[in-house]
Figure (cartoon, rainbow, N blue to C red):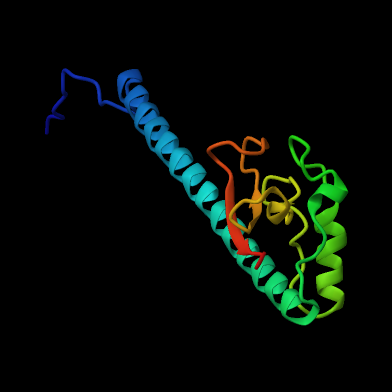
Length: 156
């Protein structure tokens, strides 16, 4: 009996080219995942802001129904700073919570860590009588394109 010998040695493992291709494919998939995750995170922050603003608006309207006026303006709390360093949200929202107009916690700051901004003195300037409550958005600057806000009719 003769043992057949092969002239080619048996191939074991992967070549460097095959390993590089696998690494490139994994890197592409990882970058797509990171980009998608960042977009999802930003949409979640925006949704959180909209939910917070709706809760604040509802509480302020209930406050106005009970007291006949909206809470004090942010102007008394340096709410016009860039970014807002106002403590109105801490003090006013705490008052709204104490009076049971707000049942949830965590409405003091937006998801980017800035205070919500509020100004109820539009009537004194003879404008439309709407009071803005807003988040300054990711850039932390007031009155820029990324601000997210609502208007509350002040009944001037």
